[in-house]
Amino acid sequence: MADANQEPKSAQLQLWDEPAAPVVQLADAEGYERRQSRAVAQCPSCRRKAASVAEDARMRADMRVLWLHPDPAAPDGVREAFHCQHCQPRGPVGDTECARCPEEGPLLAEEFAADSAAGKVPAAVAEWLAGRGWHLANGALLCPNHHQG
Image 1: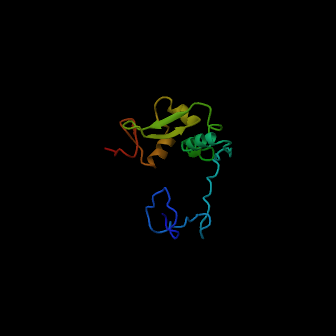
Image 2: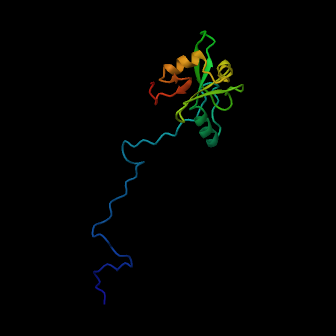
Image 3: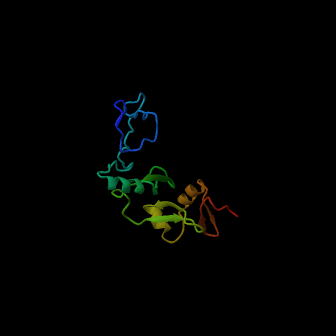
């Protein structure tokens, strides 16, 4: 017979003798701030904003690519730009890449692309690249990971 003062036995095993710790909800905790959602991607060149999550991801990937344009304000100057797929230059595009590894440099637009079609780096672009550690060795373009010599 069961004792009248005993609690009824549970079918579940009790693993601890102490009561469970109270659950603390972070939303109620003092000083808790809700995480801010990331801002929608916006192209710095055309100011277009992503309209969907997929477009946001694509736009962020596109805008990691640096483009070099001739600078109309400075003869023999270079203008840096980042573009989304909607405002990327549609004409010929040249690329810069290391001859020894898969390191890619900026893409070349407008006259720079036309000038690089023969396999040569335009002088203004070569100067810009040299300022960032790139160099030419026996006609081959090398990234900053490869020492000159």
